[in-house]
Length: 293
Image (cartoon, rainbow, N blue to C red; front, side, top):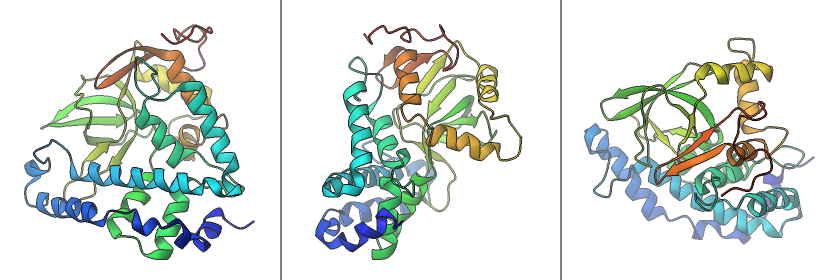
């Protein structure tokens, strides 16, 4: 069956996406990335924003506009029905309204929510269009990076200079991260978060794309045991793919949304606290039908 992206490529000019991409903003961000190649400490501008994060934010806005324009296509009925269910049931925003944060929901909707026979996402469709019509290289790099991201579990290992060192609990890979919400955290905390590589060509650090969910009262081992029960055992053949699929393309598309709602405990302006393990009944404060307060 024809990929949805091929159908949209045919209609690309009608969508007028080229009028929406603000190349001036992209160019300014690109100039900042070149500038920080010579001085790592200058990577934050006066407003405290990382230039890579600015580019990801621009791409997020582009994906949002793109998704709206595609609502006229029948091929997107499945997508809109599922996204509408999530919006109605969980009211994504931020505590105290809802623990399902806007950043979490947006990246899930655009980068993880697969639909159609070929299991495409808004991100992959827009990437195919970008390849066809020669989008700006920085935008394409950002789109491709985002396609590889998903929410994952990390253990806080401490700090390296002003960066937070996070270790993926399944793959053991470590990432030196700049947390955009300005939450620093403490060593050995378990974070549930989405991160992406920065976009400059010299310094190796990652950007947090979502407000961090901090898991309290449950250690790294508790989560490793959880994944073992799901048939995802560390170091087994293809465990990394099964881990990624479980986090990014779970057969129950509301699985992780429900965990966040059920496990919500408290929040600060720069982080949200959860507790419990998805498959352990009684471990999550809101799992017994209590309304989120």
